[in-house]
Structure formats: C-alpha cells, structure tokens
Length: 293
Image 1 (cartoon, one colour):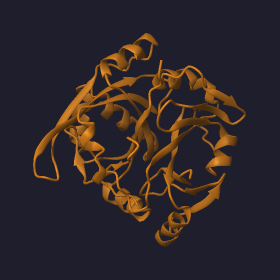
Image 2 (image 1 turned 90 degrees about the vertical axis):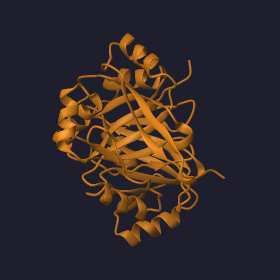
Image 3 (image 1 turned 60 degrees about the vertical axis):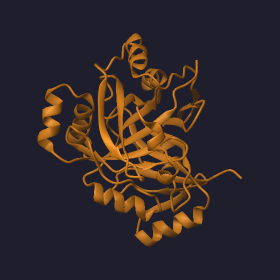
Image 4 (image 1 turned 60 degrees about the horizontal axis):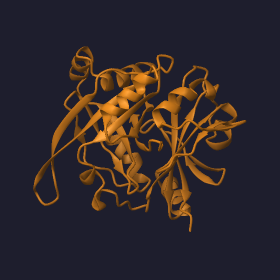
C-alpha cells in the first residue's frame, strides 16, 4: 500500500494581511484572500510539487460559532487550537483521491473524526471564466492530541489550484521537502501518524520518528533534543504533537538570508538549513534548503 502524501499545512494567524507581509518578504507569491462559507478565510502559498501552506484567519466569529454548533469539525478544531495556543501550526492535511475511503480507514483504526466535510465555492480564472472548486475532508480523531489535527483532503479541482501561474515564486521555491512536528515522547503518537499517512514503518532514532513517504515531503516528529538541534526551539511542557515547521526547497539560500535580514526576521543556520523563526505575524517556522543539483 502506498503512503498518503502531505497535501497542505493549516497555520492559524490573527490577520491574513500580516501573514501575507511576512511571507512576501521572504519571496513567496501569496494567493488572493479567499473566504470560506463558515467564517474563516485563507491566503495560500501554492507550490509546484502539489503542496501548499494555508494561513487561516477568523473573518467572522459569529459564523465560525454557528458552524461549530452545526458540527463543522474544521471550525471546531481550529477554534479549540486558537483558544489554547492562539497562533501557529494547527493541522496537517494528507492527500486523498477519495475522502470516503480515507474516513473508512480512519474508522477501522478507531480514529474516526465524524462526517465528511464538503464545501465548494466559485473561482474566477485568469481568462475570466468561472469554475467550481472545493474540498472534501475526512478527519482522524485522537482525543489526546489537543493542538494537532490530521485530516485527509480530496480536492475537486486540483488542476486550478496548482496551475503554473499560481506556483511561481520570486524566491524560486519549488515545494516542501520535510514537515516537522514536536512532542515530548514522539512514539506516543506513532499510531495517529501511521494511520493518517498510511505508513506502517517509520524510522526511529534518538531524536524522534521519521516517516519517509512515497511522494512529496517527508515528516519528522521530534523530541526536545531534536527540536533544539534542527529548529533551535526548547520543546513544550504540554503533551501532544505540535506542528512546528516546514522545510522549503529554494535555489539560493543566500538570497533568502538577504530577504530575511531586510525584513528584520530572526534567522540562523542550523543543520545546513536557513531557519527563519516564527513571528507574531506568522507563528510558524520556515526552514530553507537548496535544491539538490
């Protein structure tokens, strides 16, 4: 059985405009703000490898609350995350061609997160025509994981999302090579990640667990020593996985360093990568590495 690839990362932010400024300062092309039908909105960074970053803001608290009451698990999980943590990496979306089948696999593992969430909206294309885009989401539920959610994402119009004009970046970024989580004892959440990623054979080391996926970025869940070594962070006193960072592939680290310095963003070289620290505007670490030549 093939592993599920990583589709996108949901990163809770206070304001889309501030997150946009942070990302554009680092040389990313950020898509126009988009509003969900349940009170949240995003401004995504799309990559040619079929992954993306989804900065997520609350645009209407009343609409979000109404959606939670009606059983919208996406809103419920992001709302709970904001209450506990405020900002930062909140959810990992894995790729799925069939959300119903993904839900069945989660249920078979005792991790069923409830009904499929299906939502769609019109999208105006560059030529002026309009297409319907949307997603179907199946959630995996581990009640021990208060601040990290895994869900399977079935796109209804992926060809639009990842068109060439949407995935071209001034900094030359081509995609994600790795996603990094943190947890005091990574093996306690091995089963959740194995189920979500459909990968039964992670590699264990003194620093944590690594999932080498068939396509797209790999995933590490690190203990405190691993966090310190790779990200310069100090770990967390609260239990449960935290979505901490993504590694972005670019052609020139020096150019990224110059952008970070010009924007006044804290950064350092760690383990051969340029690590740009989280900020109040975008509370998520972005590490950069050069593409293999």
